Structure formats: C-alpha cells, structure tokens
Length: 184
Image (cartoon, rainbow, N blue to C red; front, side, top):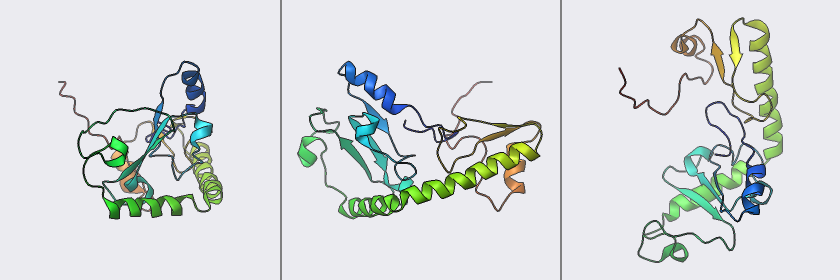
C-alpha cells in the first residue's frame, strides 16, 4: 500500500522496492490512495506492478488499472479468452476504461498546484487543532502523509459526537472497513 487510507502515512515504497530489486523479487504496490493525490512515478517507486481504482480518482466504479513493468512475468488469475495479452479473460469494459483514462488525465492536471494548496489547508487544520484543543493526538507520520488526510484522536470524546458537531466538514470516525470480529 503506497499510502495508508486511514492515517494518511505514505510508505517508503521506493526504498522497499530498491531492496527487493537487489534480490530479484517482483514488487506490487496498491496506489489507489495516491495516484492523483501525490506524484506517482513507477520508476522512482521501484515497483514492477502498480494498481489504481477508478472510483478513488472520481472515475467510474468497477474499473481499475494495473501497470506491469516491461519484462515482468505474471500468471493470469482467470483463464480463457486471451484478452490483455493472455493476462485477463472476458470482455473489456470499454466505457469504464475510457472513463478511467479521462479521470486519470484530469487528476494529473495541475497536480503540483493541487498538492501545495491541499497540504497548506491540511497543515493549517492540524496546527489549529493541536494549538487550541487539549487532549488531542495527531495520528500518522507528521510530514510523510497524504495532502488531504488528517487523523486525530480526542481523549474523552466519542467519535460520533465530533462528526455530528462538525457537519460542515467531511469527517468520519473509525474505519470504513467493517469489524467482522465475533469476540465477546
């Protein structure tokens, strides 16, 4: 995972990739959180495979893309049909692919300006909350993080209460991944 979707920490993928490359290990990273939020260069990241998802970049749901570095050999997961050089079978979703391509194009447009603007707003929010509220903890890496992600813990306050109190902000508490544990 190139960046954590909950606390926003950007992982040291480039360094990991360099180590793996020295040992001839194929390396994949999930870049769905980063592709149009930070500069994402497969050569600088030292990855052989990189995946993105349409709905994470304002494209259509149900479509994604997999970058495969030239010379990287992978086995198909679904056999038959011979599409995509034998890597994937079944009919391609042409409208979805076109929508993903356009979303990727638009998402990369003015990316440096977007990163700078969103990072300034993020840092202002972080510093304001840390300066003005007691018993607040900032989660995740302080600088190596997604521009649009802030994650805090507030001692003595329920997450739901905060979300309801700040309806003008896009907020959530907990994880978007359901807790499937059945412990007592």
